[in-house]
Image (cartoon, rainbow, N blue to C red):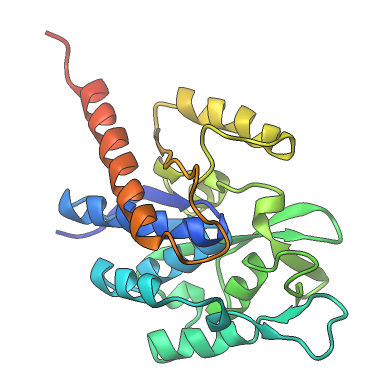
Length: 250
């Protein structure tokens, strides 16, 4: 069974919470749902890039369970822009994929979403070296250094949009599965995301998956097994609900 070229998968950011995406991918694989388009922010982009590169779900799960932050960051000895240095991403991409591919050469359409610190606008990274796009989308200001790309200074896309649906749409997705990692508990800074989520709920072309992160660790890997299980639960619930909506009346 081939990929669905019109179906997009959007994976939100959230540090270690990104492990929940693995559970979502497991459920999609079991149901033979194969998005041909993937977009992500921050940790969602890391998982999404692995999926877009053709790794199977078992490989992605093993890598996630074994993940340590040093895989993407090292202490910086010139900490002008951030305390850590993300050149480790280049090594990790090469180690996992055997090379640093161009995004446009991946088996699935892929985009990482970043923020241009100069213009305060979102940037869709859907071409060029994969490692550069990933270093940009994970670059939390003050902690990880931004990435220069032409005139842009790129950092974590979650500052603008933590569920970059527009990125998937720009690649041709007419239907989208969106995985948002912050659900019922939101701080004031995230209120724009709450409004955006209401729009997604009303959109019939969107299946919104909302794992619950409460009482789970965001910046350590201690809760990875629970996060994967929660991703499975949330994906199952959302897809079952979507199937019920699509059943003909009577």
